[in-house]
Amino acid sequence: MKTLKELTESFKITSPEERKDLVVGKAPESFENIAKCMLAGYFLVTDGKVEVKVHPTVLEFYYHEEKDGGIKDYIVYHRNNSSSTKPLIPTGFLHNHVSGIYLSFEHENEGMVRASVLIREFKIESCSGDQEKAMKAFNIKVNEEDGRSTGMYAALFSMFSVFDGGFNVSWEDGSDPVDVVFWKPRKNVSQYDENGKKIEMIGENGKIEYVPCTRKWSASIVKK
Image (cartoon, rainbow, N blue to C red; front, side, top):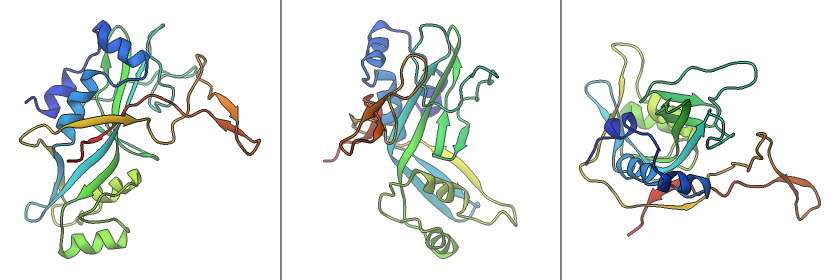
């Protein structure tokens, strides 16, 4: 199978079939291929002696085209606005945001394309010693799924001391792709109109609420 590096570096949605999927809120094959690879692998955090594996278990895809008439995903944080044009984030870089950590694979395709995947949920493989103490200090679960996307900060960056040589974070591919399912919309994402404004509705309590996004761009491993 292709590596995550190969899939993200070659990522580009051009076929009519995949573009139709994007329009109707379905995850295209390109999303599925990345999800199968990424949910099979893990982040390896190590100081050269001790290793800790952090497995993504739920992913959310984000895709926004800057060109006129392109696919719009206004929840995307890193995009152009009326006052500034943002440069592309290089492929494979981690975009650390208030909502969590995104793996970016932005590129040019007749205009800038903002593509990334948020690690919505994850699981830390057993750790011990100082790493176990750190996870307890940061209230991070071990050997079970953690549904707080912001917990990835501690999972990747708070396992080891920065002293005495520090530590390293790298991606490791799995040996085989896993079966994945895109069965629900992204969490806490609203639906936007053509002008980039959140669409409002009247809730059951009579108060104004935002219409939730219906795009099923959230991927998880098929439970067997």
